[in-house]
View (tube, helix red, strand yellow):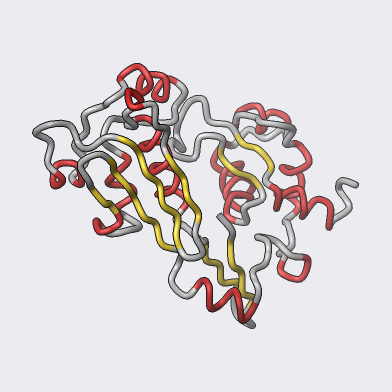
Length: 225
């Protein structure tokens, strides 16, 4: 899911190829609700202008398309759904489709007697703009903003995946509000760190880890070799 970046004289403009939340929910739905009795796995197809995800099995008997799009859900594979919920890949039953519809309209869903397909088009203008300006990674040397001393300390302290309290203690900080505003939030905004459970920001099991962009900024600043 590449990010197209354009640097102007005033700001940095970014556009993701596909909405990441919608893609995540579509993949989970395809796996959890697939009809495995037919021995047909979900299918993921990437085209030049879209992503198509197809799962076997029609809607449950008596279940309408309107109910499906409204967020009502009947799990086809209850044990699989339980496992996904236990490892925090899903929060609650039926929450996936409404999240997809926040980024794409209902026409993305295609229903047949035996299959359910979701078609996620690439961001509008993506093909044209990437041809004219060429797609770039999320961070390039000329586009990398400077890290504040606080954020630099945070990046150096972050090893693997660490919870907020452990990071705060390692940095010797007592004020959680200051730690969040001066350290965590700027690093998240710059995409130098990321949440391990992005769909549940307030999860008690939440941790932070460096991103590829975070490792890049450390390399640029000579903090790692």
